[in-house]
Image 1 (cartoon, one colour):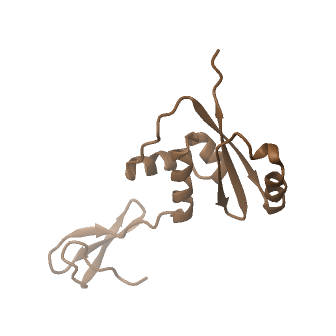
Image 2 (cartoon, rainbow, N blue to C red):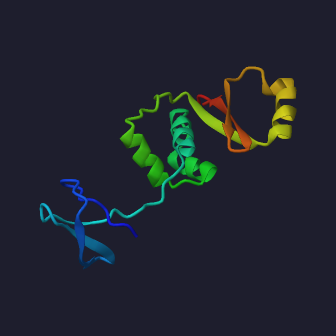
Image 3 (cartoon, rainbow, N blue to C red):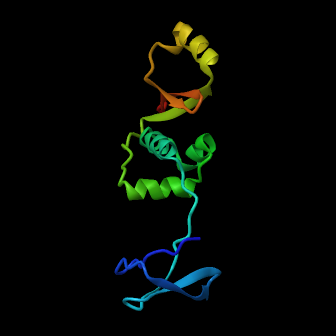
Length: 140
């Protein structure tokens, strides 16, 4: 493991200074600052961040996004807060979705009843495709 530089003054001369919380602690020889090396966290591919935000904007709930993408709903909530995304408020419609492979998508699109009187969006989802349709709530 190579020694890090000081995060405060960026001086390269640091010495080991014990272990705190299971992580190596260092001390800068120049400014005397104590620090630990940042823990390498698990990062999620930006593709999934963009897809999660797209789905949220389309009105799909956090839990549904979790089921579709396999990403924690808490992560999705954090991304929505981080990027200050506001979902449009439209209570007359609700989204429904289907995840299809290429052959199923071609078959779905070939049927005329699937294309008439509907708003629809098709988006790539890894090696599959997602069709989002909006269904109007019926007045009771």
